[in-house]
Length: 103
Image (cartoon, rainbow, N blue to C red; front, side):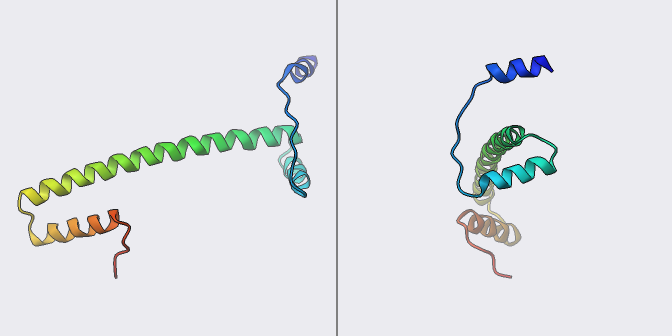
């Protein structure tokens, strides 16, 4: 227990101003999760960093997939795509432009 107190005393501290009602929400969540308010806040901050990292990774993957699709479409077009493949290419290009396909 004395180790935890020592860590608490040497840990970086930050004064935080919260909007009205937020302290109560954090207090309730901390209690329901069997954590201190500090631990609840730290846990939520850590999770937000993970989410940000995942979004960045997903964006990189999406960019890579878009590039690969563009290469495949150009290759198919240069090799004289048949009508079925042409329809797929048109649908992919429409999706890349953000157009919603019609059912």
